[in-house]
Length: 305
Length: 263
Image (cartoon, rainbow over all chains, first blue to last red; front, side, top):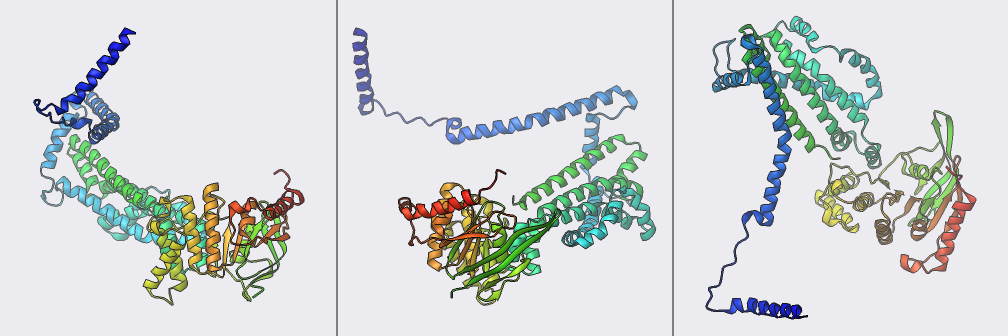
């Protein structure tokens, strides 16, 4: 009982005090302390976002670290004649990229030039493939007869290894440059044709019913319904096609020589510069990855589902 | 005009892998201008097939369909269809979808400004002016179906055809859209043919309910005139004995005379 009275008393006391404090004129009015930056709503969100980035980045970082470690172990276990290790390769890469665009005549160009040459060939060969493959894909998808006509030929030619086309190219064009474009063209055209045709054949009946009820012209059907509807499939085709082209170009350039990453790899093999071969593998991988990611980003823009 | 839409001895036979399948036979129906007709029946009774015949998306195997004394040959914007799954083009905004129809039907006669005004007006009519620049995937199912209705109304069709337009919606959204549809149809005096499997929907909206027998060889079993006064109010109808009588008639047709054996 007494404890309660004390409690009640002290409570009123505290309440009076707390009421009294702000009015006491003698005491200087304390400025309200600003909340620490990281405890505000935005600060917390910021911390959370950083933590999220770390959580997402941790597994890949560990993976890459283990990969480099493995590489180091393998190269160290080889002794003098072993593969160059990460440190040696890194140093060599720094040297290589210090001057990527030098030009000492036809067979000695900077790494930048070689990359650009390979990219140009992929772009040109793929461009030609797209120019021919996209319309062909639309026609095959739209007309059953044409699909029946072309399907045995496509089934026969598609599995042919890209490099098997190189001698044909060399024979027909008598020169290496158009021959390597030809190889890129013929190996990257199939994914474009097949994906476009599949996309056209899979345009939902609902959309075509819209076209029928509206009695749209063929041109309107193409621009307003077929093309947008096929676009995601077309993007998949382009992505696969550029992937194939990038795979093939290195091999093709090894055979045709002159310029490009493939030629460079073979040239460095002849010079027994193994660091450069390893660097080339990384370059091919990184450029391929960038192409893929770039096209994925582009494809996302055209996906409506 | 008494006979606006005429269906005479329509028969629909499909050639399937298992041989001839007679979906509809001996279908006769006359629809007056401004009338709201519901087609009701069990699934597989050919009610959607009948709607597609009127739409021209299917050609009858025999028989004739006439709309204001002209034979129906192929689809056309004078018989706009509201599809069950709204069928909006996902790469066009709501405005773009409706504009495509408006442009097709009135493009030769009106200026761009007029076409745009028309599109806005019809989106206003279905209460979607605020969402017209959104893509179909950015709005709810009920709103998509409103755009579907706007799309069809924009063509100023002679007949508005609706294939289970509210079938995919939840009950509350459906009720809201039914009320809205009643208001719009009253406002513009549209002739409507709607496929439904919802007895309440049929009684609430229709002037006549066309009840179909079970397939194969389905046909019109009975036509029920719904003589409830308009405008109708779903709450008031709940206490209306005539409403329940009509509802009972449809239920009796569907569940006693056309009992579907457990599928």
